[in-house]
Amino acid sequence: MQAVTPLKPVSRTTLSEQVALQLAAEVAAKRWQAGDKLPSEAELCRAFSVGRSTLREALKSLAFIGIIRMRAGGGSYVSERPSKYVNRPLLARGILGTEKDVNDLSEARLVLETELTALSAQRATRSDLAILEDLLQRMNVAKAEDRGKFQQLDLEFHLSIAASSKNEVLAELLGHIRSALQELIRKSLLPADGIELACKQHEKIFAALKRRNPVAARKAIRAHLTAFQRSYKLFLRAKN
Image (cartoon, rainbow, N blue to C red; front, side, top):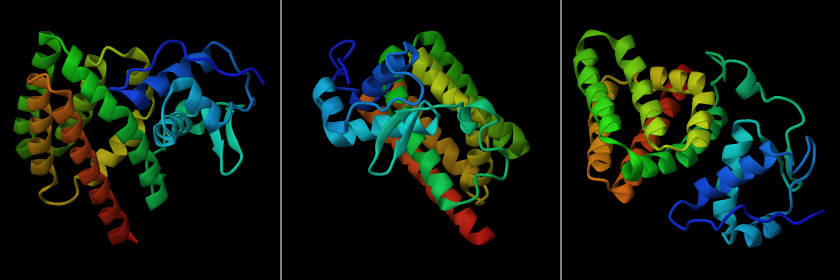
């Protein structure tokens, strides 16, 4: 099998995002055909000059949205048929019902949104920041008046951060899991203080973006996503 060569040197500030992006681009360019096995983890690590944990984060994000399939102990393969997650409303309402479902989605969100938010801190325009600030203001109004509207604005806030990263590939990947995000947001806000907590966390994320601080932005979005993962698990346990 021909060894993979990176499209360009990988930036060490956004390793998992860069690796995922380059692998996705090579799959799209038909470097490997449907069903082909990707080079081994060791080969890919050498090609991209990254560690195994960074590579696995990138592979997991690609596997979740259906670009590749990972087989335990058997390597990674280009998907042979469209992913159920990408080609129908992702995780139709009610399917996201086990802790594994939540963990899989949360891992994908952490990989994608952590780097998207860091990129946004570096690349967002004044117009982008104005849009995010307006969404925050509307969420603060909606939290007391219209729970459904708040949840819609919450999702729009995350997708707007993705758009302001100026990385169209990663933003599109996040868009593919929109339906699952809607369910996660809807059920994660069940606790009485969920909406208020979301507002405070969104404000911290926005503050980091406004300061152009990618380190703080990563920390803020990771704390937000981790909190909501815990909230969703509590919902599942209470339901069962």
